Image (cartoon, rainbow, N blue to C red; front, side, top):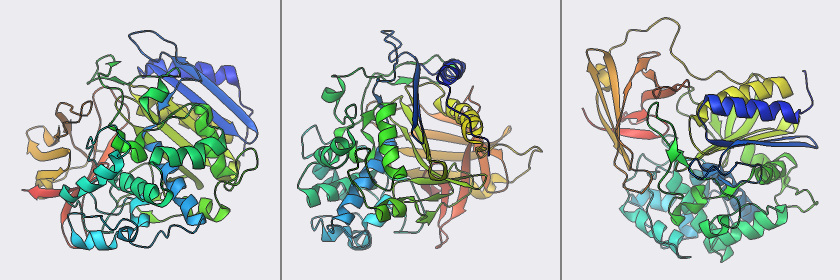
Length: 457
């Protein structure tokens, strides 16, 4: 296996070139390879001010925060305060979900593996107070259940906020404070924050949004509601994210020798917990917090994040003691990730990144009739139909959260087989899978990042 030394000037140029190609306003790249570290940046933190994006610029890491929350949970397991397989209601007797059976049986393991059935994209603003997570969890009683407990995998932000509330109860601290005491301070993460007033003390990127082939413009909202903290509100730098990743490359020991997690907890987080309902996504299985990827027989763990116009990508390859993080503030960030990480892992580690899903070489003729209709979950509705051009998908946001209320999008559904289709945004190079499948009880679902039940034909 060919291993090459890190070349700062080369990767600085490649980041700048590829970010410009994919209209990403600003980006930072970090690589931790054994004892070596590389950090480079390109572009601007804000297109309206022209402030330069640097390696010490804070970007929102979005759902990469979930791995931090899962690490907090495992620290409580290590301390003997939490059992992943005990019902959560034992720690939160006041918990009420829409389904009594789920209320009684849902565990922390369900929450950390996205199998709880709680409808995930519930961005409920409960204010800026220290009780925001507690109030959010109380509001889950009004939220419909997306699927029966454990019946499928469906990405679930709400489940991680509930996990954050368990952490608050067991530590006697708000989630932000527990994060600081257990991870931020021991790891020396001096540029990792959870609140906008903390981010203001640093150089901070703003998100940028666009539709179709438009140039990215500054988003009108900087951050999601504080209640989303345990699911995705950390802002950080590439150096700090690499320090966190190194914790998981060193069996739970910080750089100064402090043991933060047990080696057993680190291993359990990276081990397979659940298989995804189809094989067309970037990950094939999920651990505790981590997604798990197979690139040519090499097992990686990682996570992606997306907030209001900011996108992050973290990949960790334990067998080579390698971690790579990309932080961006808009544009076609997924295309940048695909091109940059493919080149980087090949050149630095001799590892070939898995090919993304794409249309088949020869067009496939399918009958979409069995799948036409309306599919709906909290925050979004999908309509599937056939017109003279072929199968179509319309995605309609029903979320009124500022920054998430986006216009409808129409896609051509390009068939891979009778149940699998791919779509992509105008101007983008990366395709995304849309999969139709049934739960064990025969209920029809559409899977487009999350499981979405069919509600009408």
